Length: 83
Image 1 (spheres, rainbow, N blue to C red):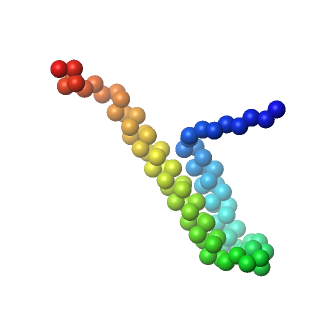
Image 2: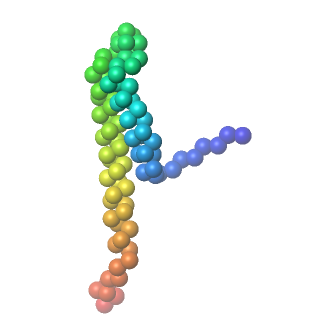
Image 3: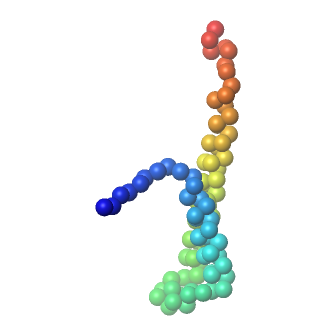
């Protein structure tokens, strides 16, 4: 039996952050880099990929912060709308 879950959640940012930290640690040591550059990739492609993941994490953080800010708005009662 197989199943698929599709969800809209900002919780993925923690996993992306963890992967990014591991990638950064390995990239700084240039671990496995020679295999990829030997196949024609450029080091700049790795730097760009790292930047893209960091931007994605920051974007998810903005959505999470915006959602947290909006949650407080529902507790207020607007008396002017009833008049």
